[in-house]
Figure 1 (cartoon, rainbow, N blue to C red):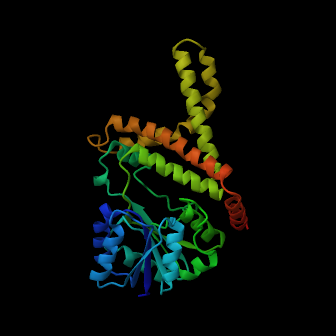
Figure 2 (cartoon, helix red, strand yellow):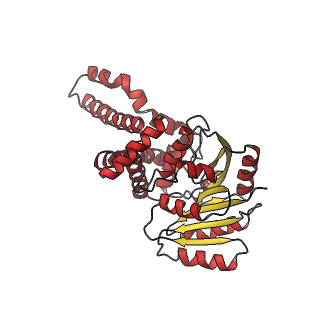
Figure 3 (cartoon, one colour):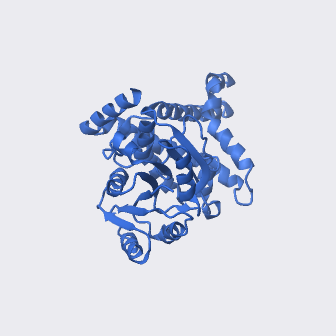
Length: 339
């Protein structure tokens, strides 16, 4: 079996760390080395990792660079790795016992290709209305493994030459989109991607609407800075405005302030604008109504709107108001992606 280096970043994950450590210790195929970059945790995460380094029989390196972003943390860990195969994840996740083995086996059957792993959530941990609403909006975190699929660095394996050829993760991005950009660069270079569809990595999700709004803002900021996903960002903004306009017209018609004819203006566009509402209802209809109540479905519509606003806010800020240096880097990136 090929030797593999497991690399990850971490920041203030003390509440999830014990499960992560236990899952890695219980892998059917243990990584030959583990390199973790801590971004300056102040909740005991770094100290717990250092204790693990001492007590474990595995080869573990714990790096620390305060306030480094995720891209910088990944690059630091990969640069320190001694093996050709790089398996990337995020500490704080849960892992099935055969995750490492599955990823390495698939790579051995597909040399010089990138292995994009599936991931999901532990549904039993989704107890808040916000977490359950997001579960509905994401169609139970189902992933479409098609030509549009971009591997997440939550579960991806590749030869170190891929990282070298790309030049590493984009450290000039403020908060997010580094793995999205990395995946797009892989595709732009024509490197084949093979999927591991098993949900061997389980992602811990937020409990509050505020946290989902913050996450959406970060995604939007990263996409805007990198100037990627512009079409989707514009469409989401347009659909949001159509939904608002439709609701305004419906209200005015019900109040008899305007005639029904005005609804015909937005009717041709409303289906696509409300598509995610229909999709959310379809997903909700398949779920246990004792856990996912009608109130949860209604709350999911609210969560959709506030996260759309947050994403758009971040995207506009990243796209229009980033520094000259970031705009220059984004221009260079997009030339490479279109090459």
